[in-house]
Length: 83
Image (cartoon, rainbow, N blue to C red):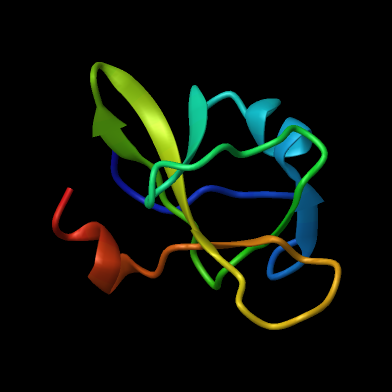
């Protein structure tokens, strides 16, 4: 998929359930393989992008290690190149 995803709150924070409402997002996955809950908060990077995995358009997340409300971060383009 070319281009980045467009959300109403660019650079903002959304729940996983809200991300799944986007027409170009089939799944949201944690790159470490753990569970991602629909109520978890995700900080959107500058240009969030999906990758094709198993025939689905997947938005990959990494854990947010800082304390706070946000559980996940979208991956930057450099980290997506391996997919």
